Image (cartoon, rainbow, N blue to C red):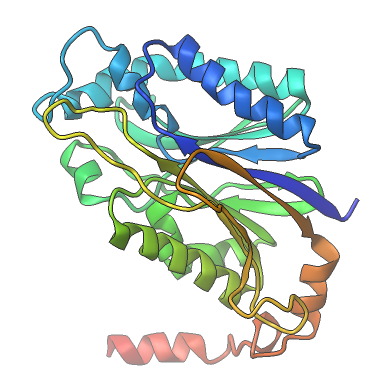
Length: 298
């Protein structure tokens, strides 16, 4: 097998009254993806944010930091258990988005979960945090996950992480061909930062990049609801091999919840890397780069 059919969700942020309702929402898209023949389905960053509506008090901008730290993290184990069941029952890899969790050292983490049909669960903490995440005391991760989905060696970069080329180049040095980016952005500048980041990382690394955004709003916090925006997409190298002048293989067609399907061909990616139209990975000058970095420090 040299291809992977991937379902990229453009997932609607809703007021979810319970973990059960949230998991039912997720499973509706997992079921549809599996029925459409997808090998993997991808969900966005902080996909369970709608569960703020399940808390037994009014969520406001004054309480939201504590609600993220304690209210949402209390539901994460149940969410992961649900994702494991879905992956097994529907025989599909579920990149279940990211969720707040409490790490063993007591720190708050923004963690993405990759769940396989055999019950395996692999994780990746977000590395580069936003100012609001720093303000609520979230701690960034220090390690990059490299895993396998179908024929592809896969890495995971959560939202802002896609804007740091050092991370994607590190992944590619470890053999990664597909980067998955769960994302949450709440203004148009953020949308373009992530979108352009995905396209740039695909171009400079001759890799596939897929991005799943959270969209819509749950009406919370009550005194300042967060409105999330974005368009699900799949990006590829910009060259003659792919024939996509803008590097976009597929993207959402609306601002509503939907699933974008794309077939990723590994042989095509390897052909792009073997004969780059522009100076690609094959034509790098790794002997030069340490000197340039040393010069910049002097």
